[in-house]
Image (cartoon, rainbow, N blue to C red; front, side, top):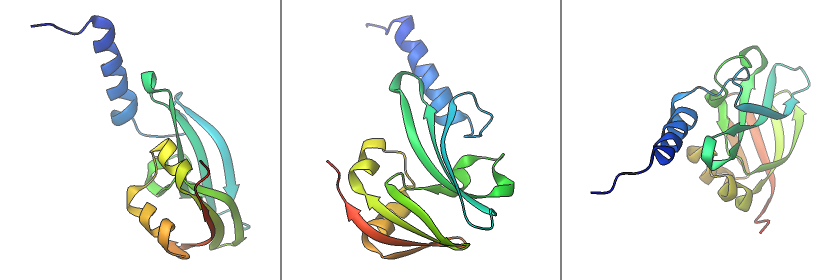
Length: 139
């Protein structure tokens, strides 16, 4: 029987620690904020961030949070990563595009919402309505 080297075992442990066990919080050293898009009243925010997942590199994430919850788990309002051109129309409505290639390339979006953004023109996520104005596959 052949056993994996210590280096391989260390990589697997790293993947488990970063990929599964740790919350996504802004104070986590593995989280790198890319963009914060606040609604006009600044009570909601769409956060785009990357997370270092060890040997696999980094993954892109998007999340919708109440501003008061930005210090909590970023996965609470997990959105599909394929959302593009995000613009707030008002305090409870955001206009977005959807890019299926970007979603498949990052493979870290909210699986339960992906089908809705792929097919529906209006998607309700909590108190926020997303209007999908365009869809593409940027390959």
